[in-house]
Amino acid sequence: MIDAFGPTFLRRPHGAVWAADVLRIVTLVSVPVAAVGWGAVAFAVTTLALLGTVVPRMLGLRPTFDAAVVLLCLVAAWSSVLDWYTTVFLWDKLVHVILVGLLAALLVVIASDAGVVVSAPRAGVLLSALVALAAGMAIGSVWEIGEWLGHNLVDDTIFVGYDDTIGDLAADGLGALLAGFALPWLSRERQVVQPMHLRG
Image (cartoon, rainbow, N blue to C red):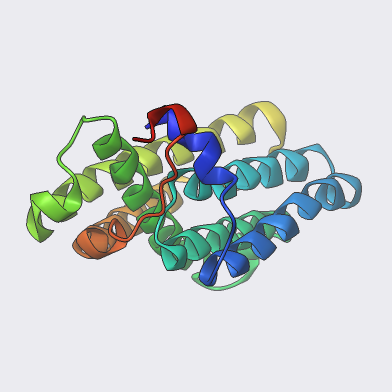
């Protein structure tokens, strides 16, 4: 699968992949804009979002899944830069539900490609949902640790708190569980391009 990352990423876009690619370009442009306008923390956040927009294309995900991940990474990054998480009621929880759900599904796809878990179409809906739930809680834990480190080591305006952390983790779990039920559908219709030396 690793050999296919490059050719799959460089494949010619069609359909909804065009929309995802436009959003990828917007995310790329966002990195210097955020750095100049909002500083180092904004640069780090948008750079992380850029990484999140690249992975779905490398995996050749279903175009709608790809576009959804890219859009939510972009929205999440700018929500942080513009302080929407602390100024817009429940926006933080909504983004946690949707973005972490999509990222959990993405992580399960990667794990199934690596042979760590059974692929969602073969595993069925219930097992896929439980695996996605575990993936979402893992992602959420890393997210919250990152926020705590950012608050204590980088910028104390990054909001952290016990109630916020528990609420975020609950939202992460809900989003991951819901995405897990959709995983058998999300993980189908992939567009993986094999490198030349592996083609028969």
